[in-house]
Image (cartoon, rainbow, N blue to C red; front, side, top):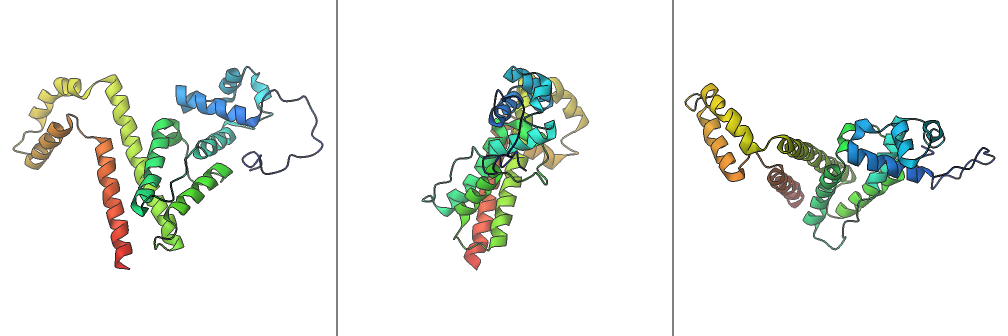
Length: 238
């Protein structure tokens, strides 16, 4: 907690020892850059120390563990969110909450490997929550429903981002066209149209439209519109 709020909580007096070569902010920034480049599993105290030209043991004077470092990394990324324009229409402001969550995950895929449950609240995450609440303040939602709306939009965006990243990684290994060339004939024999008529019809329509099994970007826009339709329909009914 003290590390997260290090710019707010006064430093402990009377500390002694050699002067630190870098600050905690630099350690966190190096860890985020490493995770963005190589993945979360490559982040370690030793690897981050190497990024900064430090000895591994010296990094423990900045952060006590990788778990603690992960909390600091998540909070630092959350603090980068831009403010949602207060003058924008309410529907656009609400949609921006989901778009920001999704964009953050696509830019930093390793965030999906850090459990969000009971992460210690730091200034970055609190400022983001405050910005999200400000974006929907005054549109007719109760305090409890404001939190619910943010949770639903965030969870929808997270699930879609996970699919988008999976699709991107799969395409990097083998294109959809190439995959169907290799596996399509066998699937036609295993799943005859007479036995799966609806799946065959709908699957053909989807494949023709997207030239792929699905399109996470399109699914996001469609799903977000439906979510917002439902939220605003409830507001209008009040």
